[in-house]
Image (tube, rainbow, N blue to C red):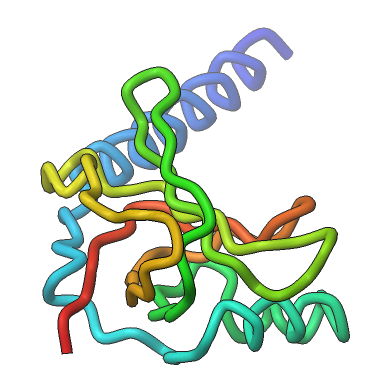
Length: 138
């Protein structure tokens, strides 16, 4: 019985080690080089999530998308810059956390400016959230 428990324990440790190794060595995704799965306005993205969150998650969750919208607010908290795009909705907007990894983290936007940002969608809380965002120039 003890021998069986030791073998099971070793297998668990081995599997956990392999998973950790794979995650640690996961290749870096250069947001500039990633092809977005969709391009839309902030209003369209928020509407998609409000109409059917599950369907929107199937399309956009953990995917890079491009969103165009009017800058509502730019703020910094704990050295993370966030740009909020207006979605013409009282309850929701699109919140874009700028990519600190590629040093695109300090945006030079003013309120009311229309911008296009590419980022990875993490779903909706009150706002639809995109992380690792960069500005896209067309």
